[in-house]
Structure formats: structure tokens, C-alpha cells
Length: 211
Image (cartoon, rainbow, N blue to C red; front, side, top):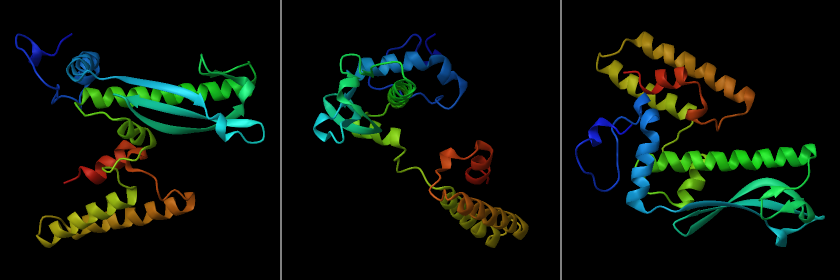
């Protein structure tokens, strides 16, 4: 189903829907992606290959090569196998052993994740590059912040509002207490680099969107 905003009128350039945060995106996702691909003449491919020149102890690592409009980026799979077990044509590990099944499943997960990120970027009207896609997959986005950074920013805003008489001191105390608990938890788990998008939505929404 074509979005109502497209009916009866032409369009040019990339489609940048305002409804991309709601359920409507899910219903019209394929339409938006198709239209954006038509406008950008976008090419995208994924190749899994074995880096044989890095052969060590009879095994060579597997790498993922992402190509977007002729530009390439490499992603490590952190998996290595004997060269005799690699099927270059099928881009899969040969055999039915538990190890081969596990590696093949891992490779499929990587490919699926890359396709998901590529589709999302295209649907949002972003200019997709191989490096951008690689960074999206690895979670290296400049707009992502640690959970602790989110708390610090929000507490700073609350402090300013409290000084202006817009927030009660008790509210600031509540967030300060919660922040202390979160830091203690992260320290115990040794996950101080935990990204904000990895946190439960109920937690992040109360931190970021609370006014």
C-alpha cells in the first residue's frame, strides 16, 4: 500500500517520511525502500571470503566485504577455518559438524544484520556508504552515547531547571540516587561502555525524553 502522502502526486529525490517512527513505517517500509532505491541507483552487495594470505597454523580468517556503489569496507568475523573447508562459491563452511553449523549461522547473522541496517538507512533517505554501513553494524555511531553520559546530560538539565524554579530538588535527588545505583551496577558488570540503545526502552525514555 502506497502512503497517502504519495497518492495523486509525483515525487523527486529521496523520500523522507515524517512517519518513520510509527507503525506506518512497518506497513510501508518496502514501498519507501523501493522508491529510494529507484532515485539513488543504489548498489549493495555482501561477500564473505577467506583471507588466505593470513593463513596461520593451517587456518585462515573469514572476512565480510561490504560493497556500496563500488566502495568497499571489510568486517572481521572473528572466525577462522582450514582453507580446505571453505566453499568460496557458496560462501559457507563445508560439512555438517557442530562447528561448521555454528560458523555458518554466525555468517548468516552478520549478513542479515547488514541488510537490515542498509534497508533502514535507505528508507530514512540517508546517503549510504560502505564505511557508514560498517559503522552502523559495529555500533560506531557518533550520535550514540553511553548510559552514564545520558544520565550526566539529563542531571545537568534538571539542575538548570531546578535553579530556574521549574523542577523540585527532590526530582534531582531522585535521578542522582538512580545514577549512583546504575554506576555501581555497570561497575560490577564491567560494562561501562554499554550503549544507550542497549538499555531497556523504559529506562532510556525516562532519561532522555523526560522534561
